[in-house]
Length: 374
Image (cartoon, rainbow, N blue to C red):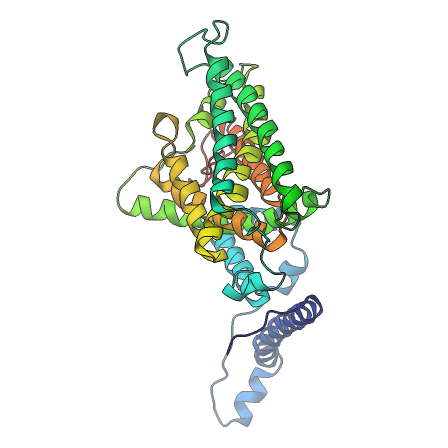
């Protein structure tokens, strides 16, 4: 028998009960541990005499005063010192809550119903993806042929990368928004509208997903190091080029294009058009989300200059999976776009911070920093 997904009121009630239960469990643990300690301290002699020479069990003392006087700086230092363990624990809790809420269960997509994508055949969705992709790539290649863009070694200057990205993404966005408008006219319930509220939902989804993606990156780094491979500090070659050119003003153009332009174009191509085409052919939401996430990860592996290393494929796949689920659950185009923007912005910030010695002595404390692609 299939379990019905929880409605909003039931979910809130369940979350309230879980919170109270967790607090109660913690309080019970403290009482169980603290009570014998107090008894042992207050009447150890009397207890020994009354029991006829019995042994009193003395448990470790709880540093109540230290806990009461703990500062925010101490908590921050603990998190930094145990970063991997904290991220893995938080990711586990978030995954458990998402499963309880039905968000990542197979039946979860039935809660709000599937997007009405059957209005258009699969080849129409693929055609839209191809149009956006070709517009993006063609615009970038055409501007790259101009003499003033080709100054310096081809493909090695931030000026060339910045101009190609700026023009290519601008053309790709224009064509993508045009395709969205045309398809949405005949398919108003296909999740093709962009709303103001997408901003807050996308940022909230980003906050939930980041520990999970970062946890997958940490595990991938551990596996690679266990088999004797060296993990790069910064996985994306263009991101590394930005860090290595602190005095080049064109790097800010590159940053703007990868933080704002790339997420819009890529999410329109992969999440909106390709994912819709796959769901239209297969008929299931989960297979469509999974296959699209695989394509998304493999395309980044096959990028310019060999793409990202294999160790980065795992977090890229998890990120694509999360954005695909978020899109199908919310049916809002802006949600995966905002999630992608936030991830790119965070990784650029982490890379710049690491490049200026933010990890302490010019080194990054954790190898998973700046592992995600554009």
